[in-house]
Length: 225
Image (cartoon, rainbow, N blue to C red; front, side):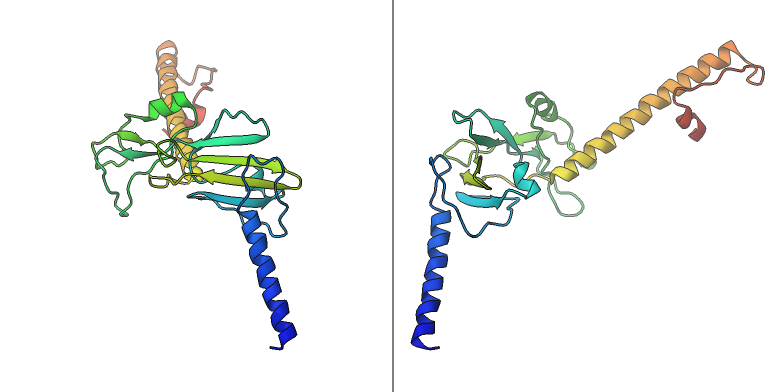
């Protein structure tokens, strides 16, 4: 490597360091945020005090997504979206599943729904415990906060605090479990309605052949039964 090449190499390295330092020294509340030449890859599980600059075209960044269970929090600056961590739901008996994992359920964003989750039986069929909320206190005794800001042609993200609890289950897993529970509830209620209407129909019309009426409610379930 010649002297000229060495100087050019050191200069490029220095420029990269300066750009990186500039990207990670700003604060989300600054009036003007720095424009970075290099954008960051989306981070699903950001932890500790960190800052990222995302591409405006990233769907995850536009949706202000996170692997952590975060809910919107009031913020004095309307240009900045503030979110606080809700923690994770754990088993009161600290049980272990057959696959060796522990119960780390995702708390609901809605306060009313989250209160209903607390105290419910542990989903582990071999456990007699109940669900407890392990709150996040990783930001000086308060929940970890995430800040999102759309500025110029990028999305700026900043996290303050370190999560002091396990990661909750993936949002997709929680949604899939709720759908399964809703389907089971629908089938149970449909079966009950079908049986009640079938009993009533048999009582009013003992001869099913002479009766032109059809039972429509729970029809599919009746056929399965």
